[in-house]
Image (cartoon, rainbow, N blue to C red):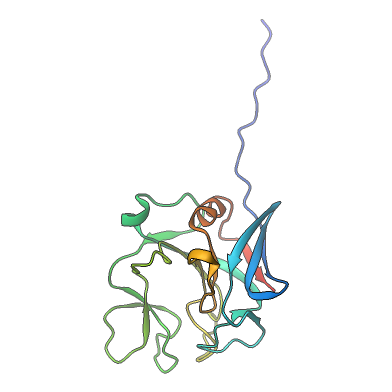
Length: 187
């Protein structure tokens, strides 16, 4: 009896690097290169900036780790497939964008009276899946920018406040190919 050779199990390959470049002629739109794939994306209204400031609308230039993120279980119905750590978003989840507060550029519980914070539970679906980029995280410098994420894009890829945003289906497909060692290079 002759044995057939067995095929090795296919293990998904985690991408080491993703690259985002602005489109020529429109600095608010870009393309994300992931292996051999090119994915349309939205960038900040200020384009890619080298000196990021809170509220400037720019997407920061640099190379950032994907730290993990959150997902809306009520909207998606399940945890997205990814090697990144993900937690379900809750109605009280927020992100401090107040440079005067000691919790600046960190998750925060809402309501937070007297503190400027962004709600992570959004009705518009932009944060149905949101990945925290390792921007201004160690050490955190006040007024250098906060809440820089990879998230779901608005219709027509309208500009973000400084994040990188993809069509929801593209983001979910991309998450299958990334892990904690993946870096996102902007610019």
